[in-house]
Image (cartoon, rainbow, N blue to C red; front, side, top):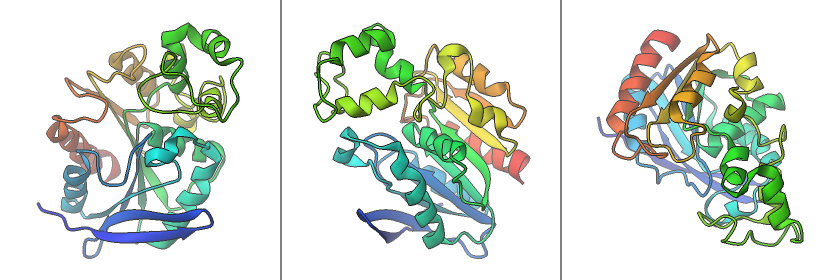
Length: 267
């Protein structure tokens, strides 16, 4: 099924945000996708296949930018997300239940909005793609939080983290300090402690969790992450064998899991 998107713009107090929306006639609801670090609203390889899968089952689909996209992700504030999510929900005005989907850091942002009790009231289900333990991801390779703090101790929050400390993408010292604060705003999925966190423990709505079998961010392993999430009866959690963090090359498997979950758990 080929989907056609409408480009939409959301004016906020800090500038414009953009998104793509695919509308279906007489929708059963709306799936709203939130991207991860350095993500955008159109670039991930699973966007079109998932939009098509939702449409086949009667759901409109939107994928939107939120603060902290593209180059601005170097200096990211978790507090910026809930207001943007609320504004997108008002603009899109879902006709029916809202399925909130997040990839990578997008999944963490959804959990944070839940923690702050700032999720849109229309939310009836969640899809978490490649959720990860952000504290372990940023600090593990340099000796944990203590080792990281020692390496950046003399740097100001506005400084960039040296490539010798983290070289995957630009990030400011203030952002990485926030991201690695244990039990802080970013620490939503502490799978290093065999826990999926309070969001998953407290949630009673249907939730699909998919983690790639070759996901570099899954700690201590993709299977261990899935086991942590599976402790909740509301969660359907699966490893997608061979899939990387962005599920490139495994889109068909992601679609199969999504369709089965929508038909059996959401209805």
